[in-house]
Image 1 (cartoon, protein in one colour):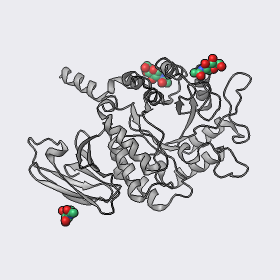
Image 2 (spheres, rainbow, N blue to C red):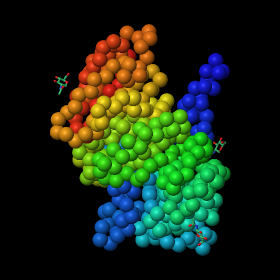
Image 3 (tube, rainbow, N blue to C red):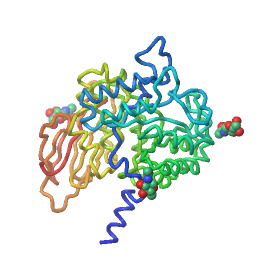
Image 4 (cartoon, rainbow, N blue to C red):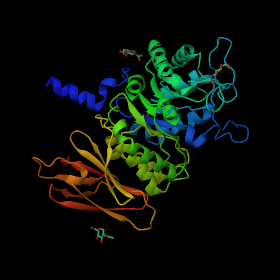
Length: 406
Ligand SMILES: *[C@@H]1O[C@H](CO)[C@@H](O)[C@H](O)[C@H]1NC(C)=O
Ligand SMILES: *[C@@H]1O[C@H](CO)[C@@H](O)[C@H](O)[C@H]1NC(C)=O
Ligand SMILES: *[C@@H]1O[C@H](CO)[C@@H](O)[C@H](O)[C@H]1NC(C)=O
């Protein structure tokens, strides 16, 4: 029995996870970056600039439009929130014009609504946007965030030497811990090391971070989404073992409801982030999002699978021709599978799957019920010696749950 547990622990990566009680399931929330970038022009663009009003607006929408109740919890500031100068005590301070009440007041506002506040910093001399970085200030910055009531901290890696990150990021982990405030730690560490050709020590990263960015920033396009999926599939044997409760690979923000993805592509992003058990941090404008995208983001069945406590990373198990693929995520008592059509030819493409091609256990099983997760429709009974054909729209998915009927 002991041996079984040890082997399982090593496989699921749980024994590496950062022990701060947070991110037991993939973090969910909203983040400013992909949609609002470093827009600091509040004079000409007051509704879309990085300001306390933007985050208050999004917090209100999250409460009133059902996102909070569906599980979206964090409201995350990204780059360009701070003043270009530290204060007389060497602490970071918010830009006084755009955050006139300061970050602590914003944290209070968000907390009163049952949400949490995240913020952003950088391990190097400067943030990517040119604001003060934390190099040489890690301890005081951790304490400042804790004093303000921050709940999540993303530390970027611009203007830093990636070789020093194996030392620097764990130092920040220690300083955050020493504040006594549980602060979810999101690291850009492996992405910068990958980009500069350094071997990434994922075990160390999982011990020190609740989530980490592996690959390029997401942009508002299907190409960008596909590039991330391809990278994850290519690296799946490295990324799967280090993921589990407390520690998640982060393929970056959900861009559903922005300009770049069609409805089918939006479904595909949500489906694939669910296969990877990835954080669901939306970056969109919740004040103007179209209802069909809001509905996708609030889909209870899909969120429940994304948030399944096992936290396993799903893998690509089948490639048919070049553009049609099957992914399977093991959820201990059942499976979720995504059939992805990467291609953009106008007609839907069929994929035929079986127990064997999906890697499902054949022994002692009569068969499993299959449900389409987006429509809720029953889509058949799959037995060990039958096969089933799914029709998948171009640049789209079919997402199914395979298991005993509930
Ligand atoms: C950070 O700034 C210091 C002082 O200007 C400089 O010596 C150091 O090389 C910089 N570090 C990086 C990684 O750019
Ligand atoms: C700090 O680390 C210890 C030991 O890993 C852990 O038990 C504790 O919950 C952590 N505290 C915070 C605030 O992260
Ligand atoms: C795709 O599968 C459906 C259902 O099995 C079938 O009716 C259709 O003819 C197939 N299309 C192609 C192009 O094979």
